[in-house]
Length: 359
Image 1 (cartoon, rainbow, N blue to C red):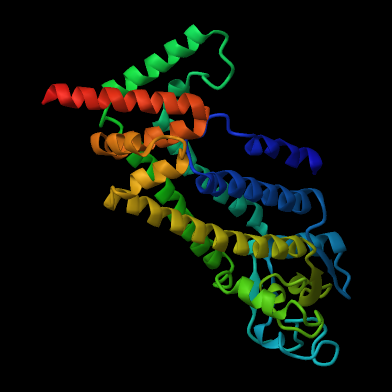
Image 2: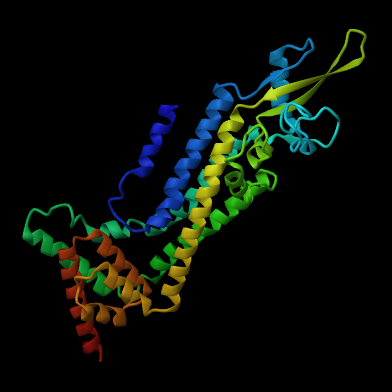
């Protein structure tokens, strides 16, 4: 298991070039990692361990009952969840009478669903990586890696300033594509929550609320969603031909140890997706404000680089657009403060000079 999860460490390596927000990184990096880890754990239990163990009083071999109940799905009786354990029912959701049945076949698909969820979480990142094309890394040009000579430093600064000056108001699509990817990450979270809710029979949306409400009660007497959604003990009915040719029925009780992992996995996912949805909602609102109210952009740039004179930021804000602002903002995250100040100050002078000459 350790070897299976060790490969996920690559997702948590420090980003050398910063060209996306921390919240966006959480939406694809951390979420993808935990979904893959959960998928690997459920796969290990399902295909390496013992996902189901059944018992019956008949003459049917245990391995036959285990295999049959696993592939045909087991069931519980919803009317029996609120009855007294040990008195009216043997286990939560297991009654003696032939009442309404709720079949549980989803546990066979949990590992696959989690894996495909991880793939969909990475789609916004994949799109942004394709669209970004290493532009920010190209602009930075290793200026933070310790240049050997002052001439090399000045040359790279000159190339960067010339590029920015020659491409004023030509980076709008660069910024918009990134904002689209953040919006896709936000939509993806909502879609995934809806899919999980459908997958668990409409129980996911309220799952975390009810689990926290009943967490302090006795497990044997409570009727909480963990037992209802992920029952530990279920029933299975097996029919076979008897010695006289008549059909005989064999009832089996099945223990599902995999559901112990499933219930913990989905309660964690519930809290994480709720937190992630709020973070991404705030981020999308913030991006919308940047699009609708341009006056917010210089304020954000000042917050990023307080050591740059206000008049320099004012000049750049008047002469550039959203795309240029996004490029400058990310350069501030990647360049050393002194280098960034020199680049921005020189760029402001040249932009203002070019505007004056044009008039």
